[in-house]
Image (cartoon, rainbow, N blue to C red):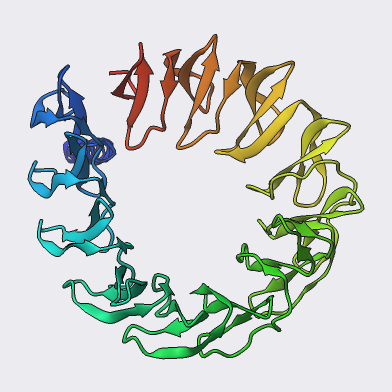
Length: 438
């Protein structure tokens, strides 16, 4: 019986080890760009060449495809090294809905992921595919630019008859004809009359429309959701959108007027009475009144006194930076000052840590205010995926959330690490390395 139990335990441990190793390898790129001193190719993490060094430049693989360059022309290969888009083009866009947009000398076309050129270089411009259709532009008989849409077979299913057009969103695309704007569906049928001075693509069932200098929101049937009375309506954030009632000066700056908020039903839940307003985040938003800042909830109730000097970032992970007497600290969502205003500079919390500056040196604190990474660096960047760039004596390195140096401060420059791989600059040259520095 004891022998059987030991066998079960061994099998369980082996299974857990296998799962752990599989997870580790899944997080490591199978192929990474490799430079042999003259040309780029791709190798595994043991530096075994898998795709011959034959390119002038080579980007990391994303979603199974990589951008490569030869003689200043771009193309696409897959992980087998097969050419999907030949290196003929000035620009190749990322894969969207199974297609690559390509262009050379202001002529646009498309390739699919099979390497087939479904649309030759014949359009003046082209957007990425969205909802199975891509916006394209060509000239009419009078040499005017006109927009329409093609399908995945390259067929022009909505003729190029519009003065302007936008990508499809939620089944509708904004289009313009005779200087008036409205919306069409996938068949090209006009479903919302072209009568507006300006429109914004639908999002969450709402579209922005402008008439006689004022903005409002409509539903997908064209029904009004708000009055068309606002000078400006911002995008929705956390279920609320900032609205503005003032005017724009000759330079495009807002002047006079006040700010408030509407909800996704179009109800003005916070009246337009503030001198400035920021997006809601975590259920709270910063507003300005009479030169001071404070925070309100979604019903317009004050969470803090309007007493702070700084226009700060919105709440992030339950905290917001505030300023008193030119010093910075943090409040929580109840308005309590949980980290005193003692720092020269602060930033949002990411991965439970916020970068702070004191006596001209940078480090990190946690949400209790405890210093986790000593304030010894000349500069630090945000944490992302558990790591952050740090600078000391003019050189960059990498730390983890415990403050341990993963990579020594010896690089001239660094770029974001993705899938365990990052680009660093050494002695004027850019190279790719992993988190072990190899």
